[in-house]
Amino acid sequence: MAAVSEKKMGVMELTFIVTVNMMGSGIIMLPANMAQVGAISLLSWIVTALGSLAIAYSFAQAGVFNQRSGGMAAYAEDAYGKDGYFNVFFLYFLSLAIANVAVASSALGYLAAFFPVLTSSAISTCVGVIALLWITTVANFGGPKLTGRIGAITVWGVILPVGFISIAGWFWFNGQTFSEAWNPKGLSIGEGMGSSISLTLWAFLGMESASQNASAVENPKRDVPLACMFGTLGAAVIYILSTTVIQGIVPNADLAKSTGPFGLAYTQMFSPAVGSTVMALAAMACVGSLLGWQFTLAQTAKDAADTHMFPAIFGKASAAGAPIAGMVIMGVVQSIMALSTISPDLSKQFAALVNLAVVTNVVPYIVSLSALFVIMRNAGVDPGVYKRNAVIAVIAMLYSVYALYASGKDAVLGGMLVMAIGFIIYGFIAPRFAPRTASANAG
Image (cartoon, rainbow, N blue to C red; front, top):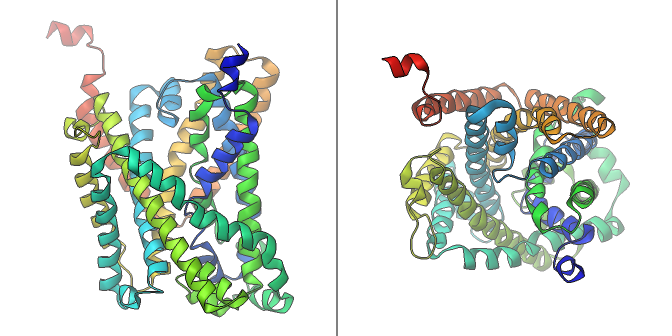
C-alpha cells in the first residue's frame, strides 16, 4: 500500500495545483479596472474571499461524495436530473467561451505596449482580439500534448511578477498615493464593497475544478477540502496584496487608464525596460492561458457530444486527438462575442465580458451547490458533517446570489437570455433521455 500512496498527491501538492489553476491570467487586468472605482474597491476582496472559500469548500465536499465525471453538471444531476445536468453544463461551457474573449482582451492590452496600433481604435481592438482567438484556436489543431506543455511554462509569466510585487512591492508603496486613490467617487462603504464583486470573483473562477483531482489524492476526504481551502486562501492573499500595493505605487488616474497595470507598476518601481519585460511575460502568460482554455472548451464540447448532450459534430476528433470541427465552431461563436462587446476602451470591454462570464458561472454554481443536500443524503453522511456542510453551502449560495446582483442588470439580462436558449436546445435533445410513458406507448 505504501508504494501506491507514494504516487498520489498530498495536501501541499494539491494546494499548489489549486492555486496555480486559479491564478492563470485572471489577475492581470484587475488593478486597472478596480482603479476606475478607486482603492475602496479593494473592500470587494473581503466579501469575495469569504464567499469563494465557502464555494470552494462546498464543491470539495460535493466532489468527495460524488466522484462521477462531469463536475458541477454531475452534482446538479443528482438533484435535478438530466435537464439540470445539461443546463449547468451549457451555461458553464458558454462562460468558458466568454472568459476566453476576456483573456484575449487582456493579452491584447499587454501586447499594445509593443504594438500601439492594436488599441488605437475600437475596430483595431476588436480585430486584434478576434485574431488572437483564431491564432490560439488553430494552434490547438496539433493536439493536447503541446498545449499542455506550453501552458505549464507560460503560467509563470503571471505568477512570478504578481508574486514578487505582492512581497517586495511594499518597499515602493507610498501612503499618500494610496490615500489619494481611496475614494475619488465618494462611495459609501457598502457601495465600495459591492463595486467590484464581479471583477474579484472573476479572479477565483476555476476553484470548482479542484475536486476533479480527488482520485489522484492519497486521502481525498481529508485532503481535497483542505487543499481547496488553502489554495483559495493562498490565491486570495496574493490577489489582495498585489492589487493593494499597486494602488500605492501608481497614481490612480494613470492606473485606471492603463492597458497593462503590472507593467506600469514595474516601470515605476524599476525602469521602462523592466516594465516592458513584465508586459512581455504577461502577454505570453495570457496567450498561453488562452491556448489551454481554447482546447479545454473544445474538449468539453466533445465530452458532451460523446454523451449525446451536444451535436455529434463536436465529437469528431483528428488523429492527433483535436476536435477541430468543434474548435472552428467555437472560434466563430467567440468572434461574435468579441463583436458584440466591441468598445474603444479595452477596460470597458474587459469589464463587460467579465460581468457576463461571472453570471454564466454563478448560476451553475447555485444549481450545483443546492444539489449538495441530495448528494449528502444519498451518501449517508454523518448528521454533524451534514449540518456543517449545509451551513457553509448556504453561505456560498447567498454570496453567489449577491454576486449575480452586483454584476449589473445588463450582465444578468445577458445571462438569462443564454439560459433561455439553453432550455430551448435541451427541448430538442430531451427525448433522448426521457423514458417512454404508457400513453406514449399506447399511441
